[in-house]
Amino acid sequence: MASVVHIDIRWLLQQHEAVLPHQPSVDDFSALVAAVARHRVDPPRLGVDSDAAWRAAALFQTLLQLRPLPAYNVRFACAIVFSYMHASGEGVDAPYGDIVDLARDLMTAKANVFAAADTIRSWRI
Image (cartoon, rainbow, N blue to C red; front, side, top):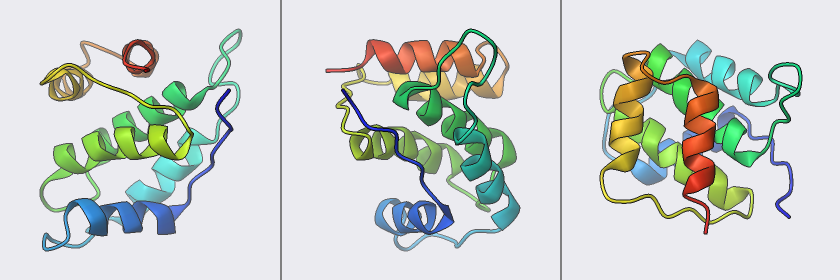
């Protein structure tokens, strides 16, 4: 069973440096603060437990919507999903292109955070 991992802004900044080492720095630190706070909510709604997939989905949607970087927000948010799941001790293997499709669905409100969490759970290995 995976452990509960709470990340902080420092962790997000480390991931930014690893994924986008020569890209623009963070433009809006408040978006990172919001992502950190949101992934800690437990339970996210009555009758729903927060697990690593929900926490990854909360980080994903928040970063996509609030756009902390001046560019490359989708790439950053997608990488955070995999990094967070790995940090939580859970492997994921998304079919090619599915993470980008999920990002698009979140950004256009075709999916919500709970649907995103279900999709991320389906990628567990």
